[in-house]
Length: 159
Image 1 (cartoon, rainbow, N blue to C red):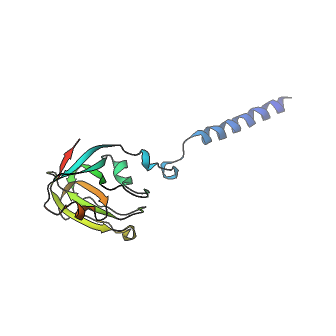
Image 2: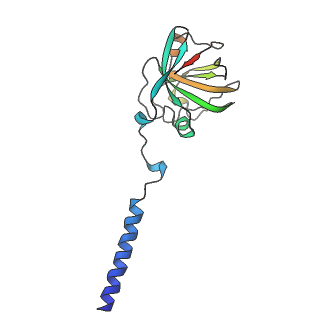
Image 3: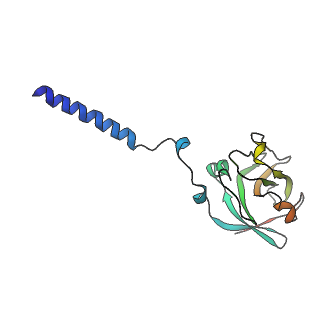
């Protein structure tokens, strides 16, 4: 009888251990990210008399994810990366499904460079600005030309 009692206690301890391990969340690299819930649109970038609705990526996690995994991006819509300090930050097309224009913007909202028609096939190439930037705007491929954005253009941010 005593042996059965200890056997039962042992089985319960092992079962509880398995239960405790299985209740922990999976490591982040194994969890699916839902990009549609990532950011909210509540701001605009103004170029002359035109506006682009933008999502803001201002945390390391949001900047790392960027537009990866999305199927497309609406016209007149973009993702604005905001960095804490000016620098020369690199961008790549990891897990991208469509081409984009990458617009490099300094801390005074002046466009200091544009990578146009950046295709997902360019991965793992990393694109860097030639000058220090504080912001990066990613929009659909060809939109920068259509909107008249060029090096030297001054943009404004509207909340």
